[in-house]
Length: 122
Image (cartoon, rainbow, N blue to C red; front, side, top):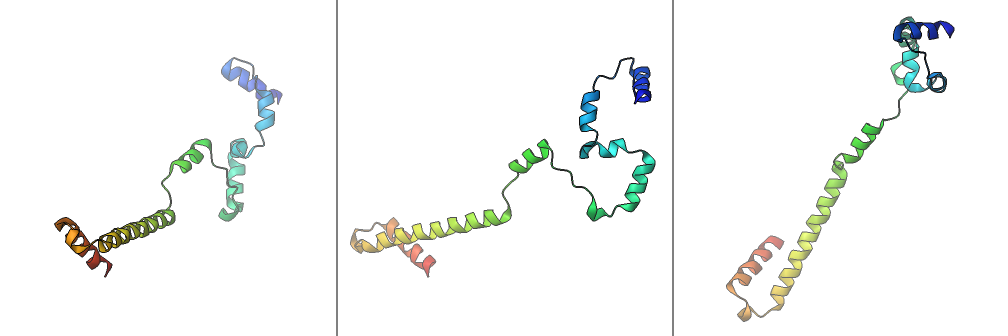
């Protein structure tokens, strides 16, 4: 440890003042790969099976980006089917109202709409 402090002092011309932080964080998953030497990394990579790799938790930016992503396809399809059902129900209600009215009182526009809805329903 003394040698590491001396090297830091020679390189940066300042004493290393973050030793308390280093002691807390040196065994965290994020910093493990940085603390291993190149030889140890090569040996570890050769021995480790890809399925057994440690999975890092998502970072802040990644989790925020996941929240902002578009909804998945299943939810979109479900909403679309609900809106289609609602649309057919509203058309049926309009047709029921037009059928309840007397044919003589219907305007040309209403008659055309009634005929159009009847052909769509059939």
